[in-house]
Length: 220
Image (cartoon, rainbow, N blue to C red):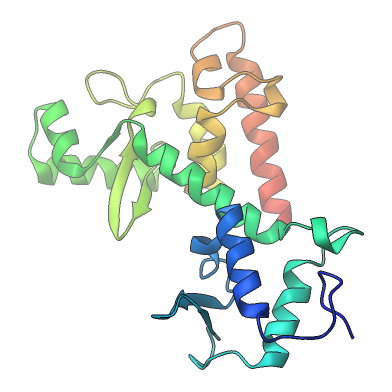
């Protein structure tokens, strides 16, 4: 038996090779999020891999299995990329980008609206329950992306009809945030939240939002 790299079945350094490969791809930090074994470097710099289910160090056979899983995409294993792990990393990078954009907490929204924090919290919960306000959970805290609000802190009238079908369908809030603020294929590369403000493209955005919501509901 040979490893996915096409080398003889000598697994003595396989853990180190896998770790170095993933570090080079910038994917090592995303192993846990993908439900895969993780590793740390010991005092000698060697990779020590851990099974996420048991907390035990991976055996040689488990490392060989992990090697095959990570290289199962494509016909040339030495050039393969762990696609599922890449997708997890891309989602993580997108979340970082979204969180770097303007957003509100209850406190900052209260200040913007000139109300109390309790009043702002009530407004957020009411808007979310009516599917007219996008709220994202970040480490147990409610975050309100600012793009959907007017300078006075009200939900944009042009965007509320677009939010409603997406949120009512149970679409993941992160996906809604990403779709509304990134160029969308369904709109020929237009950014939905921007196009919604243009009377010439507003109906197109609403139609695309309904289609996206229907596709999401069909998959669930």
